[in-house]
Amino acid sequence: MAKVQNPFQDRFSQWAERVERSLIRFVILLSIVVVVSQGLLSHEKLRLFLSYPDQLEGTAFKEEAKTAFSPAASEKPAGEKQSREGLLAITCVTGPRYPQVKILINGKVAGDLGRGSIALPVREGDLVEIDGTGYQAVLTFRLTGVSDNISEPRVGTEVVTHQSIERLGRVTLRKP
Image (cartoon, rainbow, N blue to C red):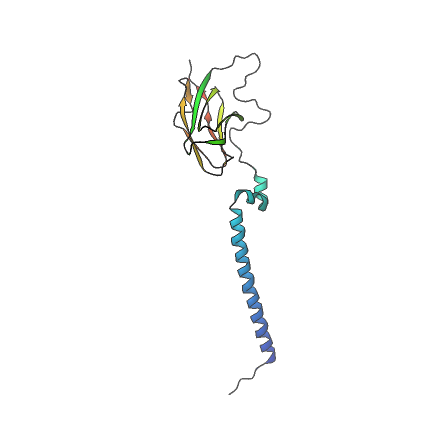
């Protein structure tokens, strides 16, 4: 017995097949767009332009960050006697030279690691940070020496940066 074809069923079947093919193409195209966009977002500099929330986030707020209205920890009011000084020696463990790595004392550049190591004078209460924002690589730094009158930070303290500013520590001097 022969089956009678309904012209409306034929047209609907053709239309459904076209819609199905179009939907499959659309899903494949969207999958490619998602993979490419995720790949672009993995690059730090491109992510800033492609993602609006990344533009709003800015940099992480540090617990010990100073405001524009608070004096630096080592700054004393006029007429008060300045504290004693100590010496810190910092070395880059990752490699020999990183001239764009800056050592910050109380938020101000005190030196760089262009020679691979540096010795810096510090005072009681100084906040010592390492600015590795100039390099995309993960860099490791070690405190290799301190003068006898420094109790914190301790020799051997390590800091790891990845395009970031990391805290080495706040200087504490021993009592005389």
